[in-house]
Length: 161
Image (cartoon, rainbow, N blue to C red):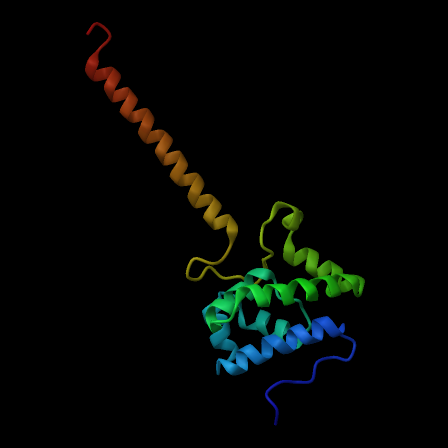
């Protein structure tokens, strides 16, 4: 029995080629879907959808897969861009899926698309909001620290000295 189910005939040829390339990378690496999920930080369910052509993988997942398999990111992201264009030209259902995965304004802001439902924080990859909150906390701690140093200097030197 073959490892993969046949891709739907309804898929755009570009999307079909891209999903086939992802499958070949997973096969060549000798990876299970669970191993791909562990190495990329995207869930097993998401990878099942990406590899079956039911959902276009977000760019972040593709970059993570390239890292996990030692594949050229440039080549894989170029193929992803072509598949994304084809995906967005297809059915309205697929357009809504890509928009929900990418988030509003993600492309114009240069933010890599993500899958907000299934991304797990793993090895530095995960929810961008987590990193944003960490930066905010560090910034706030720095400001509070600077104010404390300033207050100490004022108290130690005194107004008359």
